[in-house]
Image (cartoon, rainbow, N blue to C red; front, side, top):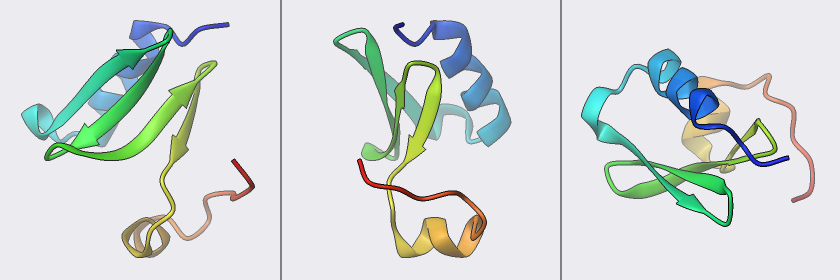
Length: 67
């Protein structure tokens, strides 16, 4: 099931970064960017956040797993 645009719009609203947050549709799914750098992907309506020190500090309880 491909990710729907409404899910991406919801993520953008919740993140609240305005024009800094952009996205590109790729093969029915989405890559999300902040300041032109990829920070997450959306597949099948699930948001996968790129592992980084910043993500670990801001959301230490996010579940992690292999790609």
